[in-house]
Length: 195
Image (cartoon, rainbow, N blue to C red):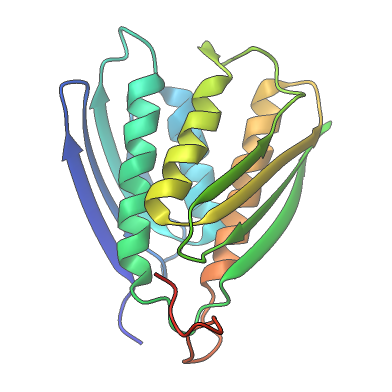
C-alpha cells in the first residue's frame, strides 16, 4: 500500500495554518499553534492515533483562540482526507471510550464521506484553559466537516474541563486509529464508494 500522507495549508486575514499528516506513522508530533492547551491536545491526538503530525498556526490569539482552532481543524481535516485517498481497505468505523481521572468520554467515528457531528457536552465547565468551552465544539465540527467524517463525541461524566477534553482527544485518536486500520482491499461500503 502507498504511504498515506496528506498536506494542507490555508492563509486568511485571521490565521496562517500548515499541516502535514502521515497515517502510518509512530505518533510523533511537532505542533505549534500559539495556544499551549491546543498543542497538548493535538499531540495527544497524534500519539493515540499513531499518526505523524506536523502543524503550525499563527492566528489572532489577541482576540481569542476561536479562529485559530477552527482553521487548524479545517486544515487537519483536509490533510487527513487527502491521506485517506479513496479509503479502500480501511475499517471505516472506530469506537473508543477513555477515562481521565474522574472524567469519561466516548468517541465513535465513521469515515463514511458524510460529515455530521453529534456533540454531547453538558458536563463541560464554561471555561477551559482560559477559553470558552464552545471553541472545542467548533474544532470538532470543523474537523469532521473537512474530513467528511461522521463523528459522535459524548462526555459521559466528569468535573475537570482539562480532563474531559483530554479524554475526548485520546478517544478520538484511538477511534481514528481503529477506523483507518487497513483490513483488506475493498471499499467498505455497499455503494462501492466513500466520497
